[in-house]
Length: 166
Image (cartoon, rainbow, N blue to C red; front, side):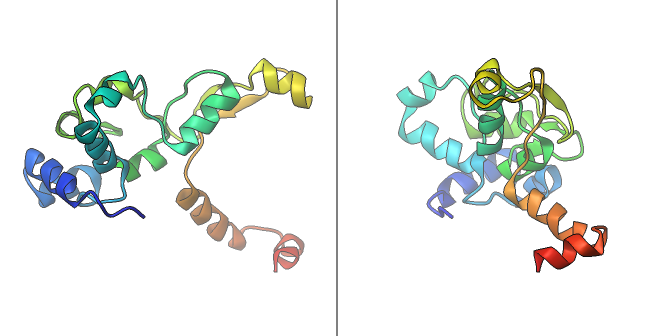
């Protein structure tokens, strides 16, 4: 809930033509707690650390990467909360990437739909915890998206399962 990036939000919005343009691209104005403004602040305040940054992940894609044993992309649902995604195109907005931090586009994998197969469970987890070899992994999504799915599932869950949850 960091709100320390008001200046970065204004800089990003100004660079792409203002709040109305931000909304047209991403569905919202630049929001202080979103990842894009946070990346901009980091790149401005710690340029040497930013230069050493090889990839940018959200918690969801980082955890999926840990389980896959390799880097996997951010899903579109979580990517939409970064102030970097062109919603209509389903891709990172180059003007927003450029306005946010130098070389940001090279540090992000192309976003994918949540149901996208991103690999299989790494051998470490198969050996350590007994998972089946070649257990498939799909792109992870964020807490808000999962919460919405969970809330909407009440109408489709069998009554006995719904009763147990209460």
